[in-house]
Image (cartoon, rainbow, N blue to C red):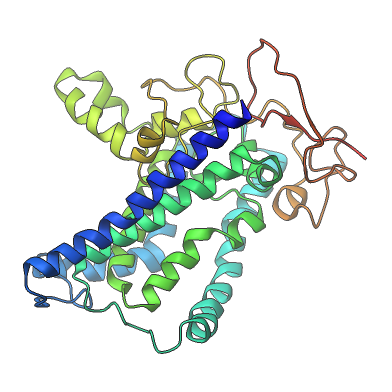
Length: 355
């Protein structure tokens, strides 16, 4: 089994390297076919997109936050959270929503203004000659494929799972839990630094457009408002649904990822890792499309741990008995638990031994 998994991992990584290279090859061929003539720079938008620049800039600075708050209010008004957003759930969601807005700006500013000029001296705006479409294609793939692997590894490596577990502990879906993450998972969010690097190299405008489009897709996939249901309900829309659910993350596919079981044929927490693009799951065979929604969410071993344990583990530990975030639990598995023929819960299979 381990050999098969290793071979699959090697194959998937090889395919990923090929995918990463596609925009680079496309840009190279473009300039070969145009005899190296730079007809446009990504520093200036194509004329048909100029009107959208102010909109995207405002959405990036404050629009996305307002969008989340408005959608969250709609969800609460519609009663889509039932009575589950109480106690520790409310605390952890609010802290995880506000903290990154205070923590990340100085970290990203230091990385962009101090670390990158030191690591990549004299390379600022060195890719400013790349056409807008080329920069958009490059960043969209580099950003989202990197996040696919970051997300996938946090599910498949028991040590890393502890840093992502907070996101899956919520027994509901919606704007309230969309930002729910352990602070280490957030600070080391790999594609943040990749995108910052590409922006430093001169791909700022494509990065802006990718960020905004991706944010709407991922927020829509987490929302408790199932905007994709009409595409499944009406036969005339089925062809659109077929393409849509294989290209981007939708509520149905992402809700399945947050299910508390994979034994019902709908939940698929061991796959559906895509954030903006679901096509990565299609390519790597980690996707499940059912057009159905799980009956329940979260993890069956959830102990409703304290907000500080979920957000700040391993700095602060949980006082809940039996919690994998409690003091005395090792950060890596010592042995694997035999797999029994039972309904699987949304936890990695290795058991974490206690000291």
